[in-house]
Image (cartoon, chains in turn green, orange):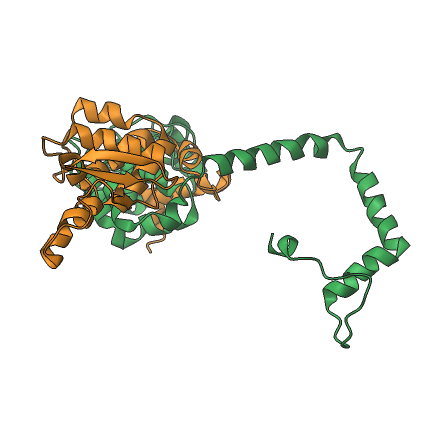
Length: 217
Length: 166
């Protein structure tokens, strides 16, 4: 944009001093060389017959215009921190989580340890929400409680009682794939101490586990 | 006794003293000075107070609020569970641009009650929207692709932390 706004340097007359900037040379070449113009023309001709480029370009311009029209305050950059905190104190954890999904700077500031008070305020707004368990971080707790998304594959997952202790949200398919029932696992492994080693299926590969399960049941 | 307020475009608004008292800048400008100077500066009708950052449409909207609260005390602070009166919620509405302008003006004019109300209005509009909706409302340019969103979901999962504790 800045380059475009600058007044173009005179193309026909070279400056009297011996220094010739790159842009001068470039402009001269643009005006004088017939080969370069021909090359650009060829390039345009090649692009023209493609129907896709013609269809996509106007859509993009419309999107940009819409964004400019809706942008009132440069939100993240210009809103003072105290106002931001005031707004967030009225939001629920899921809204703050969604806010942290919008852009990188927001994500960085909201997942930082310094933003803990924001999440604490937000948790107060939901009545009856259990207090933060010591083994969770705030972001993970909000995602675990309110975001209905499978954390393995991204599909929709409804809340399940069985997965509360695993601290993970899974869809049906992923649950069948990655989890086994406790009693079955005890049948395979024998002693309950070894159940701790099952986390992340580091001991056995998945097909082995499933095979063992079928054999047991 | 009344005070003339001049907006950005030069439109003049004649307001009475209790209404103007709600606007912190005007109150300080008109009556605060007598503490230092020994006399009030702008209590005369002939003098106006120029509010350079506020457009006349927003100023008239803000004056409606000040008119409503000239007798009673607005909510200034409290816990986040406090509920605003129905008139307030109807006043602030659901138009995001309008609320943002009101928020800016309330911050500039030092009206703490209206500032809180605007924050509550924004929070109500943002409530229950997905990230793309929030971006459209606030004019944030979304720089995450869908793929990265799924990655963030995975990152939120507890098992990832269990395997690679950070």
